[in-house]
Image (cartoon, rainbow, N blue to C red; front, side, top):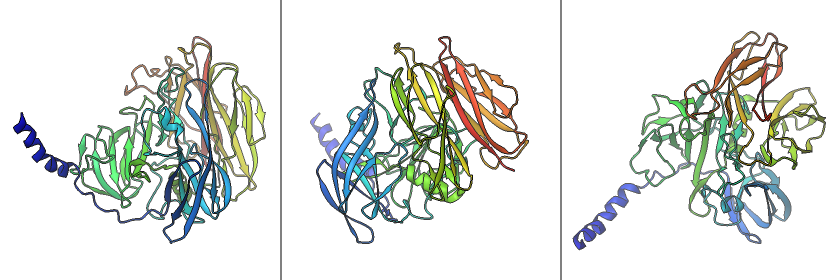
Length: 492
């Protein structure tokens, strides 16, 4: 036994060398700076241009729900170069200008208190990221939007939202899975996933490049990992297929096809791309590099939308509770939104950017937000509100629709629509919003999450150009209704 121990001691440095082979040194310095702070703590942050930014964390407030005690909202009060401000953490919030620089707060400590894992490498109360004023959030020419589809084409799971599409929101849950990365919903087997950056393929399916065992790359049959010039690791998960050109050790270029979007692996049965970035954090640990701002910035630059409606994140409440629906995160290229209009599942309306509502009946609601700018450009988004009743063992159904293609649509062009019900057997009705008769389909109800034919498929073409709000719904035996919407824009 002693000889075996001595042999193990002798071989340990060899094994460590193999596992911890020195990684290539980053050749691109990120423009952003990150700092972790405790309450009352101040720091001086040196920017890439040599400027010093003084920051202090003054307060932290975290709001949890009444059921699973999941953090639904976190706000920090900060002081930057002598200017005070309150920032909302993640949840579809972009960086703001404070004290002459741009700042966001991607994570606070409450998300780690009852989480299934520490994805962030956060050891203090909050993390701030800082950019020079007027500068891009990610270096120009180094990042593109990772899918070939329209922004918010269907459901998303971003920036610390607790999971819900696959039934992840449960009142009796001891630990919460906060979605630290970005889930882009899409159309199974049709939506193309592309490389967000140039980089080196370090993991494909179950293969891992030598020397990368102790990095964030974790092989799985449906996953690709790429490391870029910043030394950041990019994860592309739930791929329906991986492109044959994506080989271990290969170089990829921005925009190159990674694969086709699917629901493979630990997807919960809904079709989406799990896209995430891991980088070294102020704690020295690998942790999530919040990617929402990067994806937003890339999409706006590439597609040049005039206006974007933002009604997210989703909500999960008990019947009788009151929530605030917030459309104030919506954006116009002109800098001015002239109209907000909410249309609710119960037929009500509001012209306010934020609306407080009480939900008394269990179900899955999809509230429509329409925003307009001074030139008449419009954009739509949808706030999902899941409401449960007293019976916590019987959560109302949820529903996930998608369509493809999502851009450059013309009158008469066939469009593929897919839908799947969760927490109940299938049976869905489409209303395409163009006066045509409703179409009934039947999904498998997610009986087998990875079933190849789980989504019900139909095809539809719109005869005229315009903006169409497509509705699909399902009702269970208890009379609980799940409603979802898609916005389809057909060009002239």
